[in-house]
Length: 416
Image (cartoon, rainbow, N blue to C red):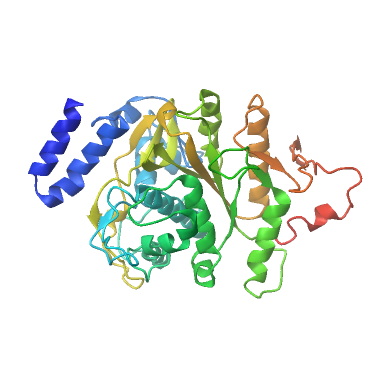
């Protein structure tokens, strides 16, 4: 507690800009239970690091051979991958939000910022694939600049904090108030359903929740027929003819994995989700202190921290020489996985039907190893909840009742 008092005191006595960038970061680290200088723990360990579906062997310093991608080899590959993720933080000096007086989201907007980072990663995966790395040279790729523009701090930017607050009003989003992951996921669902946002988020959005609403728990179920209908609707909303082509889908899975703290039985399952190629990470942290968790090593999770105040910026779509440094962070932070808040949300991005099938297979295998307490399950139908289970390396059992119409399976995912 004495170190926390010193941090607050030093911040008050410092200049405004210094307090914003340095002291608030230290203050939040104290609250999160972390100390400075912990990043070296990641590099000093020979344990594998899983970062959004890719595995890094930090202890390997030798250059990769022909059979090993340099992106997945050693500390340098990990650092470049981490630095390439989009980092979105508190901002100050933007236009007033709606009818409030707020021109900064400091101390209340961390869940919104964490969710923006996850959606930004979904867009990066969609347009560039998981192997994309930020260019070290200008001019930048126009699509990369366009993605950053979407998250600018202005109502004119599609995924700005201004528009998210408007979209989530019915779920309790309000300027100056902290919200949970379930309400945040639902707010993105609302925002994604408007025509303008569909152009910016070219994928179906599926909020996977259980029988109860996402804030009270209940085991979430990925229903294949629901996902299929969402993808079909995504095409029809564009007034296009349904085609048997790939329609990407974004899955957001709000979870409540305990009361005051996370139930330890879920920790191995959470760790394994980072091995999924479709992994977009986790919205989570400590109570009222959301972070964007993107990796795991041993008993700790790695994250991008939104609790840093930076000046508001809107990057023009046409400025390929823009300074984008405020959207990237080179320093991984971490926290013991058992300390994260039990209320969280996991994101997954599936590029097409084959990718979704792969996700369902991995999720089903994970549920089978859960000893009766899965993070979520997979079923073919929302009405009957037939289980979707792995049959062989060649494919998946349909999991259907013998009396089901033989053609129902052909209808599922016909538009994916």
